[in-house]
Length: 456
Image (cartoon, rainbow, N blue to C red; front, side, top):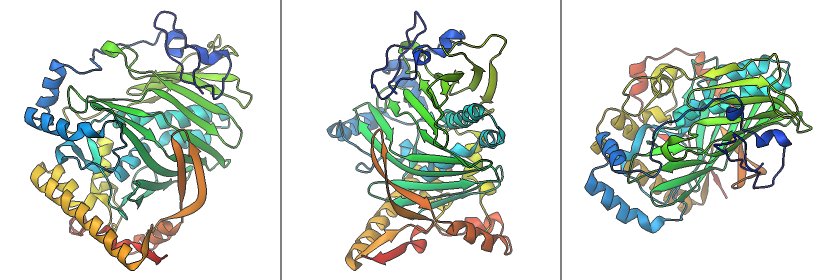
């Protein structure tokens, strides 16, 4: 698909530009315009003096730090800075990328509902709304910690889900995740590609996400839009994700194409998402509209993408209440997955919750957080030197590297698949005596304990 752009006067999409495919005249319309679903937020996308003052009040940057960091970073303009730059801990939130992956499970009930539908188009409505629901959490402007190779994150006690993620590669940074309950399985190989543009950063999700709905075994493939982090150094930092999200039913050929409107001056179009569910013949069946920070709704449509007479717009998802004035803009669910409330019995020593730098930052000790972060990164480098000297290579414990290479809009991706060993592990430890939170908190973080090595 191309990237349709909104005409503020007529409410229609402009012509598609990338030419990958066209889905008829329907995608040339703006659903929000058809349904009078408009909203404006005052924001200066380029940053300004007022924005800078607001950002400084958050305690993120002091003026001298801002200028020093700019002198260090300007040489990287145009580069992929995924793993080549050491960032100050004041930019971080007390969470790792592995935990951030688990945030997609907050509204997993939408996948449960999708699995229960016989209507293939409503399945896509609910499944794509699930994929959109995490963007409210993803608008946080703090950076999560990069996981140490072999680091893991486990989550239980939420929607009957068992979730495991693991850092499977350090260069390039890659993570793999698997979640499962009675309704669905979720498998992801995640790899980010970035482009530093000075005061902003483009982030490209070079990953593969697959959801299998267990009722009929249909497989859904998700391609999310890129993300742009604006005003990294000067002005108020904010996040936008302009572009297309495409979810395809690989079993039937049906798909949903949703366009995330870019934020314009004074916030015009920010948060808006609209698009259509199409059948395999590329005919629109259901229109979808909403805001990724608020709610998503749907309505059956005709072949021209117009709402069917006698039908009404129906809400699918609405964002849950969030804490007021939270320092890191965490949701209640983010706090939940960061706690031991969602930890299984006998937590792996490689779990992100146990990282001393993450824990120190959570307690507000930036000095200790920075020192611990440096110590962990140096030990990771030392462990790699030892492996290289012995001719060993790292092999993940819970995921296997396959021979499959997947093409994405931003480059090829090697695929890791869940190997089932974690399910066996959990069955064994869950049948043993439980331990309390104090016992869990006393475990020393050690991802290297579980490193699987082999001789090349």
